[in-house]
Amino acid sequence: MSTDFLGFGLGLRTKHFSTILSEKPAVDWFEIISENYMVDGGKPRYFLDQIRRDYPIVMHGVSMSIGSTDPLNMDYLKGLKKLSEEVQPQWMSDHLCFTTVGGINSHDLLPLPYTQETLDHLTQRIHQVQEILGREMVFENVSSYLTYEHDQMQEWEFLASLATQCGCKFLLDINNIYVSSRNHGFDPMDYLHAIKPEWVQQIHLAGHSDMGTHIVDTHDHPVPDPVWALYEEYAKISGPKSTMIERDDNIPSMQELVEELQLARDIGDRVWSQEKRAAHA
Amino acid sequence: MPSLKDIQQEFMALLQENDRHLEKRIIKQGELTNEQRAEIYRTGYRIRLRGVIDSDHEMLSLYLGDDLFDQLVEGYIDNAPSEHPSLRFFAERLPEYLSKTEPFSNHPILAEIAGFERRLLHTFDSADSDTLDQSVLQQIPADAWPTLHFTMHPSIHFYAAYWNSVESWQSLKNETAPPEASHNEQPTIWAIWRGPKKVTEYKSLQGAEWVALQLVMQSKPFSEVCEALQPHLEEEQIAPMLFGYISDWLNNGWITSARG
Image (cartoon, chains in turn blue, cyan):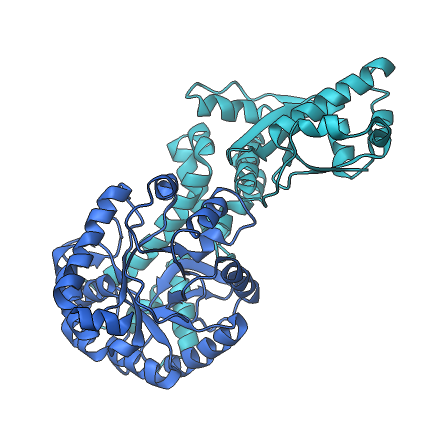
């Protein structure tokens, strides 16, 4: 897996396919939703093949269900491996969650209990998946709306234990940390201070919907100020990390997203010295 | 302490059956009640699945109207949970559900409209292949034609409609009222394919063209296709007609190879 600092990227969305090819926007790399391209052909695959000639690609999945107690879906993993061989991504990620139960797919990133049983289960499954795929996987922290009574540790302690026990790397979603901190009443800086930079492969930034009593992780708004502030704080700790903005609904023009991405670049310029950038390149 | 498996089963029971057992596993925090926390997941589950049916079956939704479409969506989510990692396959069983579930099964055109919309989706992401153009017709020696086999583009799908379902779909797409549902003893065969510009296209096939296409799809040689057209066309019409079909198929981007 590449450990290079790729710079600042965006999620690849169908709305922007033609613009990317015709205007070659100032985006350092794109992240694809793996499942959207696990098809035989057609428009998305055609555009991906064109775009990957000009931009590094990272694959991000939503259906591995790494935390499920169901058996691993071998057909899915076979399809994912085939796609990775064709796309040759810089790295591949999915989520620390479960999506399937008894063969039924919730199509949601459901929260795992933070227990030793879950840690052991994840460790075994992550090793198994990495062996099948023939490459290391990166896993993202999810946002959540509930905490289990029988949790044995905080979420950030769970991630730290998983990194130590399993050796896997994380896609740190700063928005998810903020959303969960508001929904569960913890200090997001406690979380960020617990995540060692060497565990982090990539960072996600996104927007959400503030419902007053809680926050819903909708990815349909620009990145809000509190998330930018947390990103800047973690950037000071982490040094240069490949960072991207996720936008899945109310998707604006490519130009607007490039302008928003500039805010992340500006933070990088402020907090990462040339020496640090060189060290991570 | 509940096992990981217990928690996951309780979570799915919440999503699918509105079983509220999971609420007892949740820590009470802040302004939200445990019931509200569980409801965020249950509501999200149904909204997500509903969004897929809305997006995949836009014309069916217009044909049914809001109330019946709501009834369809709610019933389908409860009775046909997703078994595939990709949401694009969630509504795959909708035509079957419509054909077996009252009141929808009383109107068979509904399952046909849904079936047509599914074929459009299948075509959208079928495999790619390079296609031949008109110049190939000049390159084939005259003596090679009888043994010629064509390979067709993998995106071509066919759909047999016994009701005026596709015509109704077209009307709704054009923002006009659909015709009254009518049944035919013989189906209309529709070809659906992804054109050279990656756009999904469709057209109805006449009898002789459909006969020829079925044989071509089975890799039958040109001479056999000509013979099969004898009951449908005058002898002297067969070659020019077939030549015309092949020319159209090339224009449509249907033919990927021609080999003797």
